[in-house]
Image (cartoon, rainbow, N blue to C red; front, side, top):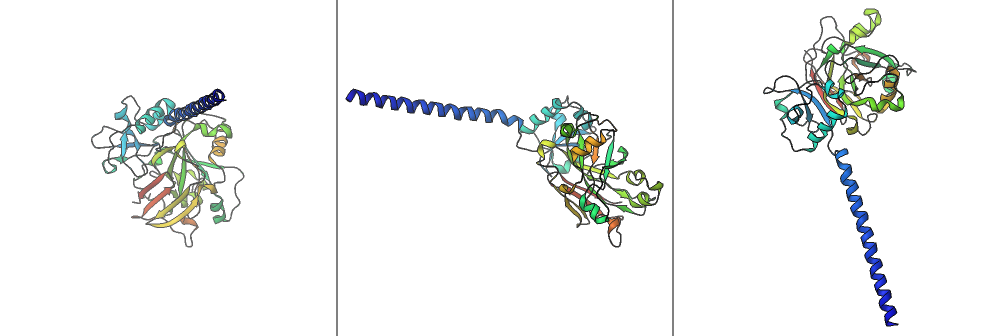
Length: 333
């Protein structure tokens, strides 16, 4: 009986040790899997910027260290990187992986006060715009929600930086504000399927679709182009926030303030046609290239539909803000 008891005791000890070994291996395997995951899931947002600084020659690429933070100079981290966002996006994963490494490293940060932010994308091949793309904006005008996207354009020469001035043209007396979510294309494509569309997106930024209402409604045969494309009529920025850093681009608070007063306040969940729909629709007609910008429409609250109508005047300050993306501030001159 003694021998049997000691055998049972030995078997129990062996079983417990085996269970502990298996459990330990499981914990080790879990830890290894988690360690493998982290380089591909950076905890900090990727906020790509174009900037200038007094001690640097020409524009540079950088990383904004959080919404409203300083700037890491990507070109100093890796001098082989291109210095324009379009060229950066054209190189795809190769350049993005360098930016990820820079984000994970402890690098010097240039104070925000020492840099000049440029638009995150300059001189894109095209700036595509979408009209009447918020349900609440359609209600504001008492018009039906479009069954197909209403597409128009701005010339790339209208793009300015996130804190640049908006110049009132002498040809217009009815310049209005419009805050918009802008999509930046990261990969070339034509006839893109809705299900594949997000693979062609680099990220998102804030846009101010400044609009000369008199040139939209009574001039130029009511074609929208000229009223939308005066110089300085497309402030963008402050950063191109990569798509993996935005939880849901179609559920972001979006607002515009003029001289501190909230004039537009909505959510991108009010968009009639989402990013994927717009890319699929527009790519039937044109080829998208890295750096192309899509302005996805504005919510209600624009000046022209106020009673009486209100338009921008010299000295006004317009702030366009989108949750997770940041705020752009433009003085009217």
